[in-house]
Amino acid sequence: MSDSVSDCTEPRSAVTEAEVEALVRGICFKTGPPRTLGVEVEWLVHELRAPRLPVPPERLEAAYAALRTLPLRSALTVEPGGQLELSSAPAASLMECIGSVSADLDAVRTLLREAGLGIGGYGHDPWNPPRRYLHEPRYDAMECYLDRTGPEGRAMMCSSASVQVCLDAGYEEPGPLGYGRRWWLAHQLGAVLVAAFAHSPLSRGRPTGWRSTRQSLWAAMDPGRSSAPRLNGDPRAAWARHVMDAPVMCVRAETGPWRVPDGMSFRAWTRSADPPDHADLAYHLTTLFPPVRPRGHLELRMIDAQPGDDGWIVPLAVTTALFDDPEAAETAYRAVKPLAERATARPAPCNPLWVAAARDGLADPELHEVAVACFAAAAEALPRLGATAEVQGAVAEFTDRYVARGRCPADDLLLRFHGKDTRSGGEDARFHGKDMRI
Image (cartoon, rainbow, N blue to C red; front, side):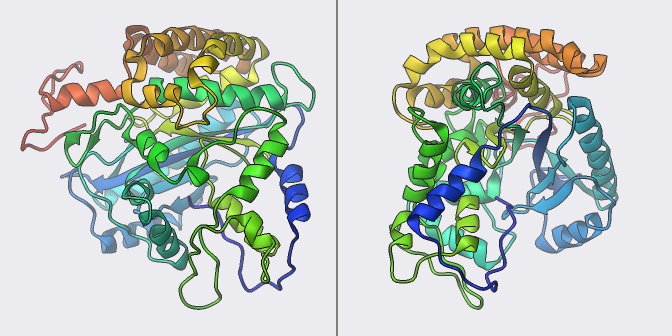
């Protein structure tokens, strides 16, 4: 949600409906050999001494001003609720990506620690209600728009965090690394990733009934904005239609508040007396939040933020292996094919498969079976991708602790909520009126 916004003072040059469809088709899937990857990691910022307490805005502002002076290789941005995001530059290999982001996170943590702050990897804030930190026309308009359909949008803006894996679209030709196969695989395997890495079962200190509350919020939001297009037919044509038929969130203004239309699609806007321009189209694309967003590359947005300093590395490594190693990609494709029937014709994340993944995690028997096969394929592929022994070990440890046992990180939080700490060392971390140390 921290996508850059085009300057609305640029000279306007209206675009027609046909031009928009041609532009979207041309920019959404840039094909070629999968050579680069990236990751975007979001974190909730908290007080070191009392992690449940929200950080006062003035302390966040001072900390972020200091962070912006660091010579980071990743782009540092701030989300509407004050969440911190690091977005890697495109990397030529998995280990290059991990090394670059890890070094940046070390620098970020050190500076925040000096300010008495820390970062936590939760898909949804376990304790605090949504509170907006950024007050800008974009987010004022976004909040106004999303509030029309319920509280989920505000929670998504201000209380959620994720690990987003970015992969090349793939070859133009068919096959395990072809863009059509990768697009389809992302939407079926996406449910497995939701289930395996679910880490947001709590809100305001209580269980929500979902392993991934964050994913449940996306499913409950405006479907024209957070749903995927249907998977039948050509991906480029399907995405272009989706962009055109999606509702316009807001119309930017040079001064004052931005206008929030009621039920106007982008297609209808192109047919109006005051049609959009190229910058309006570029901005509109940043306001669409499907679980897989084509931006030339594929942006996989369904994974909850993970526990631990290096927890984000496991979903990055597993996802990269299952998409960029041909043998693992073929194994994953065959493993997830039976899930397509269960997904039905409804788009993610609102279909029965994705709902089960968010609600049950790997306690769902079918998702568990597919996850076991996919994690095994990823483990075999990681040496071929140049992953170090440490990265392979982290994936093996996650597989043993969670995947093999039909569990996900959310299950640890739920056990602690009920006063049953299963971590080695036995530190008691209860929710019942006491500080929780995770």
